Image (cartoon, protein in one colour):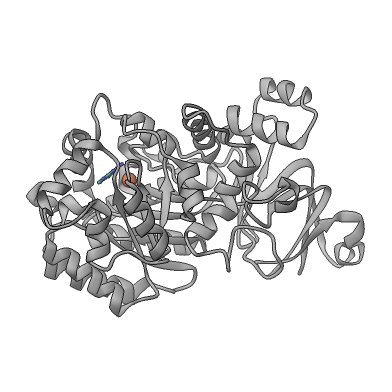
Length: 441
Ligand code: GUN
Ligand code: FE
């Protein structure tokens, strides 16, 4: 049975920053309808023009709420859910002091299942329907996350961390065991339902050349899988990579040399790249996850969005929880705007919401499935309350354009604006729903 969701419907068909006129890059139907059948989009448009279809459908009227495609978080660590907001350190000390001890616990499958539950609920309650996710070094961590995501029918990309040096013993694998475990996980989960696998070396400093070779070999054997890692986040990290890989031209060249750059490779951060490195990402079709709250929280630096766009490198938005400080893509956009401001540039609300939806889908090479409401795409969407708080409602009552409404939403909005979240046409979150974390409190 078809369902017609009525409301103010917005989605993107292109990148507004590349269009001569931003209106050419999106469709907005103030009295709109989104028609869904068997988990897929049938049609989107002005409600009065879809009368015939609506008559055959069950109608759910969201009135003046906003209906947009589900947010896509292009970089996040689920095992760091519990350690968000860890005080006082930049990247390398933060990893040692807080991150590695937190990740230790994921050898316990029951623990991993509990955190997966809380994590996926956090995504959905923030309107995020797809994410590219780091597990820990333990294969069990990925089993737990994928099992939970499968029961929610989410489109999720994840992988087990590969890490065979420069971390505590309790978190190390070896080149051989990481190869074997990753291969087994790919065979078990990749392309099962909506789940996809990312080969996940943590970052160059925690992998030996042998392990990076194994990762490159896996990518060659399974060309359809993703590669997910960190790149050029912190100045001390970059110096460290130089000393560990003296034969390589640059940090990016390390990944390129080991055959880890590709049109399905996503490099989180990529803040301090030189021109050569940007050119390598562009020529290999690699993508970047821009992680504003994390880059500010760890004092990592200011991401150069316009440089990447000019070079033709695809960029998505990531929360990078737990270095990131929020699961909310709205709060992430708020911080993204400020990072761009500090460089005397502007991030329009249209570009912001594009990055959080279709831009993210494109950066993950998932735009054939998700990212907008084209006919046949998977029906992942969010119903947004413009006024998440009485004050927000008041502020919204003073707005005079769609751009202003969206800008206010991304600047002062958060999870209180998420009214409902649908995955494959099924409501998986509704405001007020019981939170799994409260079970144990
Ligand atoms: N670089 C290597 N590991 C990590 C991590 O867990 N978080 C962040 N932000 N950067 C990293
Ligand atoms: Fe990260």
